[in-house]
Every structure is written in C-alpha cells, then in structure tokens.
Image (tube, rainbow, N blue to C red):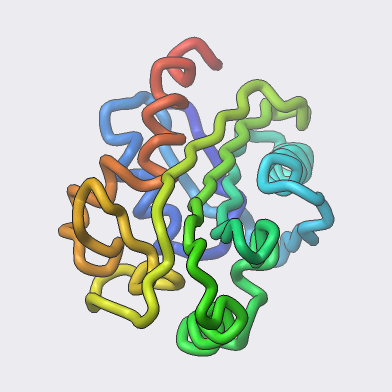
Amino acid sequence: MTVLVVATSNPGKLREMQSYLTDSDWKLQLKPPELEIEETGDTFTANACLKASEVARATGEWTIADDSGLQVDALKGAPGIYSARYGKNDEERIERLLRELGSERNRDAQFVCAIAIASPNGEISLQVEGICQGTILQSPRGTNGFGYDPIFYLPEQQLTFAEMKPEIKRLCSHRGKAFASLLPKLSKLA
C-alpha cells in the first residue's frame, strides 16, 4: 500500500475520500495539522493543485487535494472559489445566496469539484474536475448533507442534495463525478 496524504485537517473529508478509494492500493492519511496552505488560486483547479503540491513537498509523500464550490449563473459564477467564505456558517451562506438571487428567474447553478494529485516532489501528476448541474430553490429542503445542499436541486433526481440518500449523492455529485474520472487513472500512478 502506498500512502496518499489528504491535504486537509478534516477527518470527515478523509473518510469521504476513502469511501471513493476503497478498492485502491492507496492508504490515506491526514496532512500534519500544523501545515496550513493558503488558497490563493483563482480557480478550483489552481487551489487543488496548490494544496496538493505544497503538502507533497512538505511531507515527501504522494498527496491528494480537492477544492470545490457552487457557481450560480445569475451571480456571474459567485460564490465560486469563495463558497466556504460566503458567510460564517451554512445557514448564513444560504441566506446570503438566496437574498442575492432575490426573485431572479434564472436559477441555474453548478457544483464543481477539482481534484489534484502531486508526487512526493510536489509535481502535479493528475488533475480532474467533476461538474454537477442543477438549480437553486427559493428555500431549503432536506436535512442531509451540508453547505448549499438544501437549496441545490437536481431536476433529473427531483431532489435536493440534502434530500438524497448518501449513496445516490455519491454517484451524481460533482465529487462523485470527479472521483469517477480519477479512479481509472489513479492505478497508473506510483
């Protein structure tokens, strides 16, 4: 088994990534908690590459990083790379987004997830992106998930992310699509 450092201090994110990599030969571990990487990129891919590269250089191990967020068409792609910083908590972020959208009729949006893997010397060896198209509801629905999940609606499922069973969300989410693209390529590394 080859170690793959996850460029996060969040054990929940490690568990989520592990669920996608159960059939691989990679053993995931969290980055050292004292290692903080500032996200200065202007795209999700740039931030994922930055985090993967910096953590790989610092640890000397293969590293995986992701960056994701919500882009709303009527808000010119906002909140975008600032999705997590659009408010102090999920409730504030949702309230702000709904307030800014107001009565706008075009509520098309997409969740984007960029994943990058860096070799132990910090070179980016692999990068993928997954996109999930949907719309923003007028008010939250559902209690599962986190972040913008209660207002992100998938017409083909007729559910918000927050109303979906986890196994359904895993298949159709932006992160699920990114990992589906990543897995066939991952076996060729290391």
